[in-house]
Length: 419
Ligand code: EPZ
View (tube, rainbow, N blue to C red):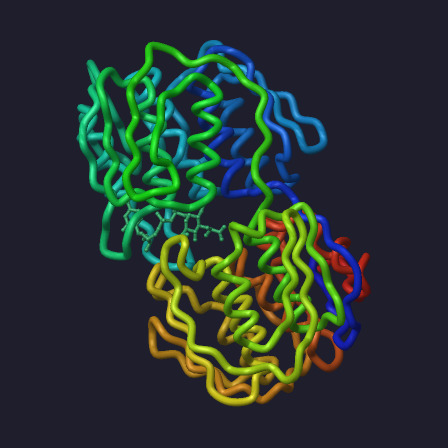
C-alpha cells in the first residue's frame, strides 16, 4: 500500500489538464447495458472506481476493451446478478440496477454497504422503480427487482436531504425502454445527469428537460450503439483551483467547463482570489489576503458537497471565523480531525464546521478516510510547514487521475512511497 509525502511550501505555477468526469463516466458505462450494440466511451479517466465498474460489466457478460482514456463495451447477452464481492467495493455499482431493469425487467444486485461520509440509503431509487411497475424485494443483502412489464409513470425524487443524483440516473435508465411517458419531478440537475441523458439520447432515447428539475422520458423500443465523450471532471477542476488558492502564484486548469463551476468560482472570488475564466480554461491567482467565508452545500447548482473538505483546507488559512455547513451529507467531516492534527482550529457541530483561521499548518502523519477528505489533506500539505504523510492513499486514486504527477508538473513536491 502506498502513502504520499507532501513537502510543503512549494509554489504552484502553470497549467493542469483536467481529466474526464468520474461521476459522469460511471453511470454512462452502466448505461451501455441498455443496448446489444457496441458503445465507445472516450475521456474515461484511469481510476480504480472505473476499473471496478468495468469489472462488474464483465461479470454481467459484457465484452469490455480498455485503452488509455477509452472504454469499448458490447453487452450482447447479459446476466442480471451482481454479487456483494464486486458491489461492496464501490457504491456507484448501484447504477446497474436501472439498465438491468429497463432491458431485462429484472435485477439481483447486492446492496451497497455503509459509507464513511454518512447515511446513503437507496429508497428513492427503489421508489422510482416501483412507480415504473417493478416489484422490489430486499433479501439476503440483495435488491431483487422484477417486472413482468414496465410502464412510464410520474416519479418524485425528493428525499430528506433533497434530490438524488444516482437515483435520478437510475430511474432515467430504467424508463428509456419503458412504453409510455415517465416524468421525473424534483430531478437532480447535476451536469453529470445531463451528460448521461445526452449519452442516452445519442443511443436513440427520447429525453427532455435534463438539467432541470422536471425530466420527461418517452419510452422507445430499443437503443443502438454510439461513440461518446464524457464531460471534464468539475470536482477535479475545483480541487485544482483550491490547490492554486492554497499554494499558487498563477495556476490554470485547462479542458474544463467553466459554466459547471460557478458555485466554486464565486466563493473563491469572495475569499479574495482573482479568477479569469475562458471557454475551457480557468486561471486563479492571489489578490490580497484570504477572507473567511460562510458556505452551505446543496444540490447543483448550489455549492457541491464534493468540494466541502477542500474548502475547509483553504479556509484554515483565512484569518477570522469561517463556517461551512453540509446539508447533503451532514456527517461528512472525517477530514476535520486530521486537519486538526496539522494545527487547524475547527469545531464541529454537525452539520457545521466552525473554522478559526490562523494561517499556520505543520506537516504531520495523517489518515485518509474517503476520496474528498484525502484530497483536502493533500491540499493542506501543500501549504504546511514540513512534510505531511498521507496514509491509505488508495482513497485518492479512486477519484483523481495522477494527482501527484499533475501537481509536481506545476511546482509541487509530492512523493509516492511504499507504506
Ligand atoms: C453522487 O452520489 C456522487 N457520486 C457523490 O460523489 C456526490 O457526493 C453526491 O452525488 C451528491 O452530489 C457519484 O456520482 C458516483 P445522492 P449519490 O443520492 O447519487 C440521500 C464523490 O466524492 N438519499 O445525490 O449516491 C443521501 O443519503 C462522491 O465523487 C436518500 O435519502 O448521492 C444524501 O444525503 C461521493 N435516499 C442525499 O440524498 C436515496 O435513495 C444526496 O445523495 C438516495 C439518496
